Length: 299
Image (tube, rainbow, N blue to C red; front, top):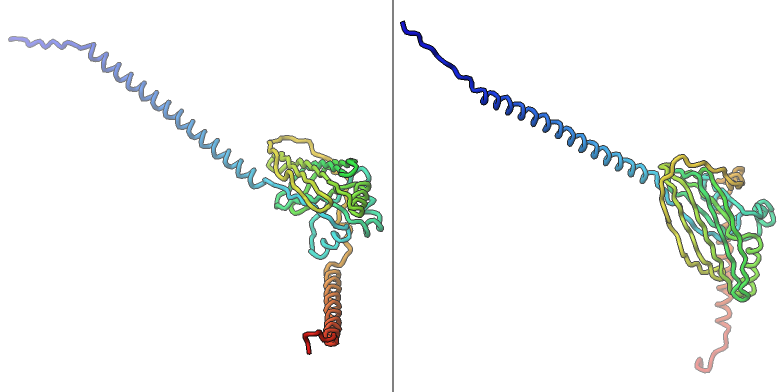
């Protein structure tokens, strides 16, 4: 009986190649997965950073406040009357310089003086904090070239939306000099330079510059009126508020409705009186015209 022998030769090279190719494929797959995950994480991180940055910008924009500066020439009594009639309940803070508040606390000066004021208004709905207002006023007599300077520096811890701050442009000496030069028709210039530094609730510090020249107490030329810089600030030391007068305290006991009706009645009375005077003048003019002598052309 013949025995059939089958000899199987193992191709170790093929096995090794198969194992090696499988290992390489697995390694490549792992590398690809790791690389893909890394790229995905990087993209997600960039997306998150972009989202955070956009959200931060939106927050900063929502809390961004640009104050509104303006100049006023009025008596304090007229301004108080305006607050009553307009039913304004927001705080109006009156600040002063080194010469104090006599112009406001003295009844005679309060009644007679026409004050030149700088008004800073927070006309947004957001609060601003840690406000510093530095002013420098230079009055120049153009005939004698005499210069009189006056500077103030005041701080406000908080100015809520809709609230205002008032600061005099002039001290008493400059005020009297301006009145005298107006009376004597002496040409003069008043230079007013104001720097306002304040912080928003988004931890931004804003520097605002307002600079004007007033010629002969009439013509106003604005040299600067806008934001100069915006920087991020963190853990800023809070400021102590300077001494001020809250004008709302001066009118807190006034019956606004009765006062407004009284002013309205006075205004109507003045209008009726002016109309009656005008009606009385008209017949006199007509009578004088009818009695005028005829001219040579009127036969």
